[in-house]
Amino acid sequence: MQTTLLTITGPTAAGKTGLGIRLAQTLNGEVVSADSMQVYRNMDIGTAKPSVTERAGIPHHMLDVADPQEGYSVARYVTETTACVEDILARGKLPILVGGTGLYIDALLRGQDFAPGERAAEGGGLYREELNNRYDTEGGTALWQELKTIDEETAERLHPNDKKRIVRALEVYHLTGETITNHNRNTQAVPPRYGAVKIALTAKDRADLYHRIDRRVDEMVAMGLEQEVATLLAKGLSAKDTAMQAIGYKEMARAVAGEISLEEAMEDVKRESRRYAKRQLSWLRRDETVRWILWAGAPDMDTAVQVSTEFWRTGSII
Image (cartoon, rainbow, N blue to C red):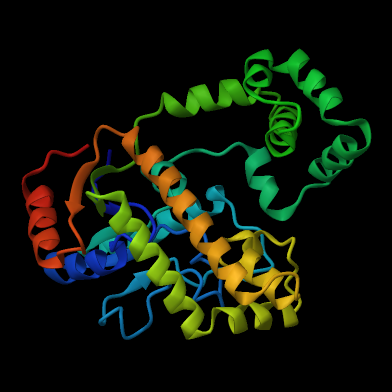
């Protein structure tokens, strides 16, 4: 491990953005976003992207680095964020990774080496397109059986309906001659690139978190989320594009299309956001190295800054 980073994570609406900015001010740091949807330009309201005013003069990185029409992968994130982190360190500042996309955080800290098949997925390789077409015409079971003859261990973990992972596993094997099982095993054997003090912020009472989620959705709609989605669609973004699958956008797209009312869309966004928060918490609780800060009623930022700073200055590198 080359050095230590500070990561601030947790479920949606837990107060990560505010804590990250406060800690950057306290610890001479710069914020690096770890949010898979804040990478997209012109998607501000629905992703809770901090405004220039909210950033309080603290440099923020990995925001607005892709057009919504682009596919954005974890492989691309690791490549671009690693360069960003190294630049911050070279300038004597502390990189503070802030966000709730656990896959992105874990991959960055590991310094994960992605197989060529995964990198090719960004640009859309011809072979991947061929596999997708075969899956649609021959059926998932046929390609699952093909994968089983190549990589039985991976196949046994997947359902024939899991198109994305079956196609990816076959593509990796075609492009590298190595099964994705072996690739993942070799990757996990490599020591992490970065050590990190990991802090997760959430509520003691799940009801308090859900209340904040519901209130945030109300605020997003009041700020113009429906119009933001309408503008993206008018500019040619399709409801099938990856960016439009984000919570808040896919539901509002249905409202813009007249399929459901605005009120129904809001309730759908709240429900899906609560479900997403549960998944985020489940992901984080698998990591025994995370240090938790639990707030009651509403986040106490002064206390959170104090506790986080103590974790950073006295905590061992994980």
